[in-house]
Image (cartoon, rainbow, N blue to C red; front, side, top):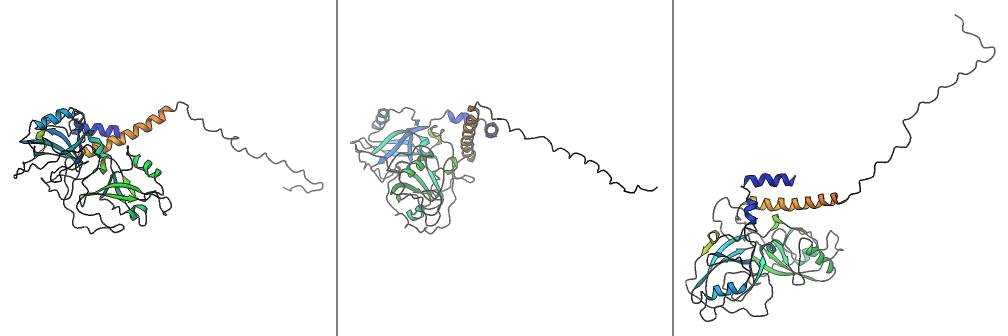
Length: 349
């Protein structure tokens, strides 16, 4: 069923899925930013272009040389954000003395940004409720206690921390803040699951754009499911002009860098067990909704193929049904005529 539906959608959008495969699905993920005034977010932002050209070579020396060539001027970085899957161009002044942007980078596939778990429901008195997880607005990004691989990665890690505190990096899109949450998984809290919350994973649960971002055009939607075509030309980026003050206060990145999901500063997390007041939500935005549906159907198609493969792998045919015992019910034998008693009177005509 999903194969036929995917082929139909491909014909509608001019075989857009084939065009996506030609795009670049890699970029330099920002691991650390030593300058909080620079509008680049660690973990969320990927550098996919520089000075109007797409970055298609993972060699960091080429990227560093391009930055050094702009010493005393500005460099234009094409940034792809995991929040809403959008691209933009940021013009950054490069100091003439240090010739460094103060960023720690790592060549990473953009698909790692989809490795998040959306908190959908939090029952009362559950471990997630006691930890202060908020339904529908919280997203679990990862943990400093281990590396999560795939959809089952979080569940496997939780099983190892039953009865012990587990630290999670959680992003809230309503407040646009990342915080560290400590939760104690348990199977004895009176409900289902060790975390005590319903989680969503996949194309329908990617990070949305922050509610604070304005809507640029009517009809834009919440998500953009195009993960592989984000390395297109710089004409797709939203240009941001260089700062007018010409600030060059950049600090070189130190050697002992580590992965952190965001600069955890600003608004403190809401108190545990109480949801913050929610105002009127602003209109969300994004890009083509059929990209999101394409990714959803691709995931379902993969699951369907795996299921079909498991059935085909079994070469032993199922045993025939057992034979029914006995045949149809037989009629009872006719009763023998009783002999007439002696001396009985015959019927008279």
